[in-house]
Image 1 (cartoon, rainbow, N blue to C red):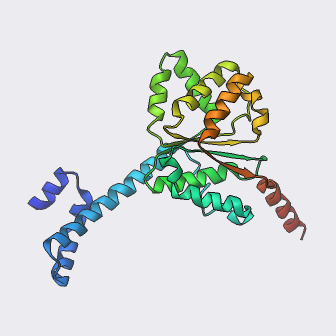
Image 2: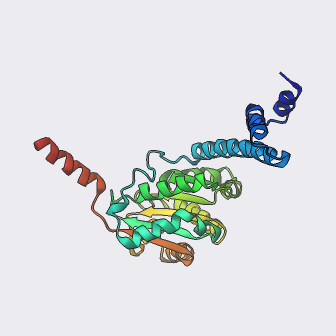
Image 3: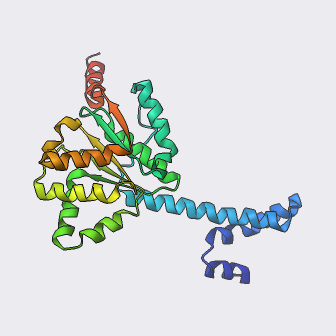
Length: 249
C-alpha cells in the first residue's frame, strides 16, 4: 500500500482511496485542472457517505420498506390527493414543521402512502421514524415510569418527522394517552408528526378520554397541517376480489 492510500485510509476516506487512481488517469486524458480532479474525487466520497447514511437511516426508521412509492397505485387517488402527495414528496412541509394527517377506511392505503413518502424523504437526507401508535405509547409510558420521559422526547427530536400509525385503532388507557399527548405537545411547531387514523376527529374523545385533552391535541395537530382524506375502497379487499375472479376464470 502506497503512502497516499495509507493516508486516505487513516483519514477514513475509502471512496477517494478506491477512485483516485482512475480519476487521475481520466484527468490526464481530458487535461483537467487540479481543482477539477480534486472536485471529482471529493464528490465520490460525498456520494458514498450519502449512500451509507441513507441506508443507515432507512434501517433506523423502522419503516416497512416494501411500502414504497413504486408499489403505491397513485392512479387510485383523487386528483386533489395526488396533488397533495406531490407536495409531500418535496419535503417542504418538514421545514415548516407541518403535520400530515391521513384519514380513511381500513385498507385504503394510508400507511402505505405515508411510508412511501417517508422513504423518499430519507433519500433526500431527512430523518423519519415509523412506529405504531400502540408501540409508541408503550415505549413512552415505560420511559415515564423510569423517570426518563423528558430524555425520550428529546431523543425523538432528532427525527424531522415521526409516523404514528393507526392512532385510535387500539384503545389505550388514560396514562398511555397522556404520554401520547406529551409527545404531540413536545413536537408542536418544532417537528412534524405524520398520523394515520380510521377515526374522524369527531370520535377522538375515544382516544384522549376527555373533551379538553381531545380539543388540545386536535388543535396542536391541525394548526399547521396537511390533511389527506383517502375515502377509497379497501385495496386489500379489491385485490382479494380480483384474485377470486381470476381463479374462477
